[in-house]
Amino acid sequence: MPNSDLLPSLLFKINENQLALDAAILELSNWVEQRGAAEVTDNVRSALGAIDKNQEFIKMTLAVLMTPE
Image (cartoon, rainbow, N blue to C red; front, side):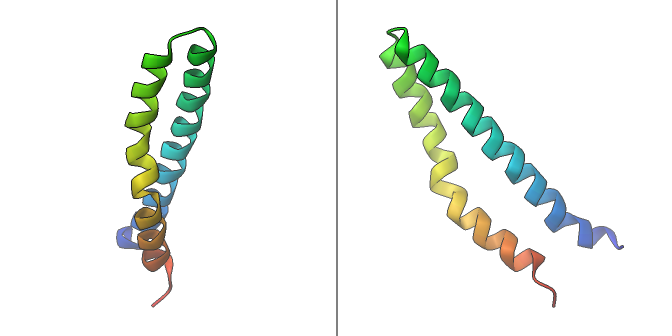
């Protein structure tokens, strides 16, 4: 398998890791919010918004990269 064939798989795995971290951080943010630190939670959710905002583009690009020619 040429190295160029590995790139889409690598990017897919990196994206999976990113989504897992997003979920874990959101879970921690919910825990913090339950303890009264709403400002921290708002900041965390705002930062995580970039992941949500870019996710559709990432999914579409990965689909194109992983489509056989």
